[in-house]
Image: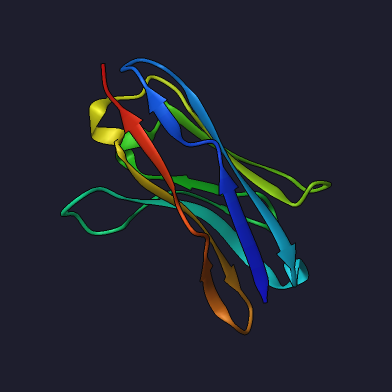
Length: 117
């Protein structure tokens, strides 16, 4: 199974930037896709961005297109989410997640992102 450790969350002013990191370990060879999800208070968890390991195709939620960028460092087995032009609506707990071939979806512990002046 894959283990995920997220970092990089925090408090930022509107218009600011943050970069989230997700270090993967364990059965990384079994990963099909990696992605970032978020859950705001009182709302359902939603997909923010994802990347297919074989080929690198990416997918973004409409609300973050042009502001967020998902990327992966294969050598470090680390997934990133660069978040620019942050808005108060981006405030949420952000979760790293991977989809494995056999075991299905695995989640990280989550990291809080708060956008406020």
